[in-house]
Image 1 (cartoon, one colour):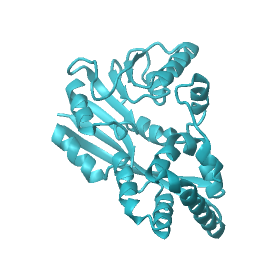
Image 2: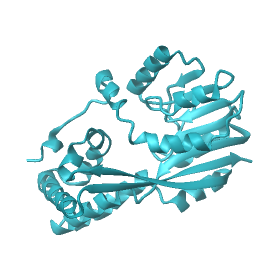
Image 3: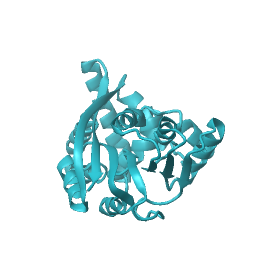
Length: 278
């Protein structure tokens, strides 16, 4: 029995969300690259899309200082409550939280000098609509900086997942696995084409990567971040009556890889893209 398959998490529970806030290892590499690409100037009106629990929104607000105002756009109510708590505790006064979906921003036309998104623009329901909204609310000449991880993210895991499906005569759902990857991590040329079509000009693309190392597949599957951010979507790919079988075989395969290589290393390539509204 795969005990990790039976865990459930309530992401609207404030206590759990507080614990999520203590696991920044996923968002931090993206956010640090984003912060290094922003042109720091006084008196900016800033929009951060998908602010989550407040990183890098609150960091950006502090680095820009009180002459600038940062608007944090976020639909997740429990995360907003956590962000409000941190604002109250830190005394940061130049952040305004906007509870809304990025597809329908309740914001004025040509309002912002700077738009940022830390691995958020690739996690929306309608990416083209979101980019149109970004263009609408950006001032002429506004900078837009975003990060996103690429389709090769955790390639080591997905290759093992696909091999397991084929071995268990479930090759017919490999297409579902590939669609799952494409839904969240578009190929870079596809994203660049969308940006150009909407009307932003790309100024710079910086490529980065980091790794997540685990003792083996068992420790990976039981890791809190993997549990709350990835596992449910992986489970959804596999028919319910085959999940125990598939994930037992996959866990074994990953453990064998770790035994051979010394650990299980998952690679996360991502880009930081700097755009401008002409």
